[in-house]
Image (tube, rainbow, N blue to C red):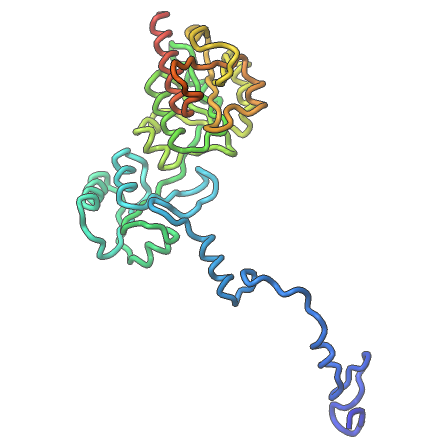
Length: 320
């Protein structure tokens, strides 16, 4: 019987009602264990596995696995068109991967030929291994890794400009998040005699493979600097003798009236949607608007930058 000290295991132990054969264990089993976790938070549930899989992948053509903030690690370029364009733009490549048994078409043949010409390391892996490496992106049997971009320091742009006979010309981007816009700006700065581009460290596009391709190779020759604090960097440029001019649809002066020829200039271009941020706008010496002949209210960030840079180059040629 319960409590009989002659039977092994039946002796009452210390603790309230916790004896062998009693209802102590049953009572503990009936105690509540808190609210039931959601299905997606239970490791053994299919919903948990589905959620984990979805967060580890970046679906879509030309997609690649996430690698942290731009410039923090190697970047993947996947898909035959994207890889071929990257090679044609002479983007630095760390290594290229081709899936075993990948169908040979003109694009793949061109990729293999360019890899051989450039001496690019070409690795043949199984399709499942390439799926794993690229995070399940649609790679079409080919992918490559690009080393992280090496950003300049903003002070280096001042040093580069000081070594040239023409007044300094730098473009700063405030919240431009589309890498294609960044690449197009880099291309325009190189085309019209600029000395570099500055981007903020946060909330901004970085020099990814997409930006590099859009720059049409200019990124290999023109420095792009990263500023920890764009407002502070602009103030430092102003202290160095630069005019800080922000592009704004409601600017205080029209581009036709603004003197672009004499002083070293930092042209600040705002984001695609919101334009210049409040602090950056307050830091500018002047805000400049582009005269519009038609009903268009504003221009794409890279187009606006190209228009002003072309005008700067034209007036500086006339002033010589």
